[in-house]
Image (cartoon, rainbow, N blue to C red):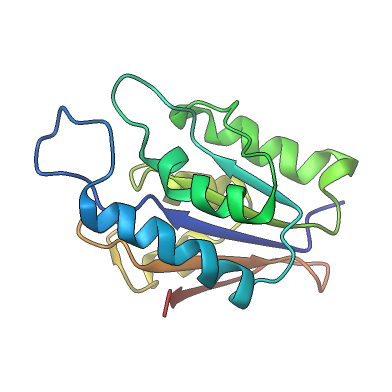
Length: 162
């Protein structure tokens, strides 16, 4: 009952001011670029998810909003940043996500936990480029994590956006 494929990415670049919840100009440019890149690399996504906006960060939403607009799709932001386990359970158990291509944008601090909750092996995460131990390198903004469920089991890869 799992999705066919999940594409997970970190939100785009943030400003130098840690109190600013929005994207930096570089992040805005990346979000615009992703609005054309994602449909080319992953045609016809069925659903778009991002961590819910909060007083601390709008960045996952702002990263995928141009894509959602370009595709004429809703951007589902009902899961809080720390609600990754609930998102994972819903994606793996609810029939409406079965055999779908789903794009997810999240905060780097919880992306590894989200992947683990989706069934990615800890050893695979630790070996992924852009990781520091079992944490996403905070300087990395340009990777897609691809979780493929099409063979009845999960395969994981980490690839550069470009």
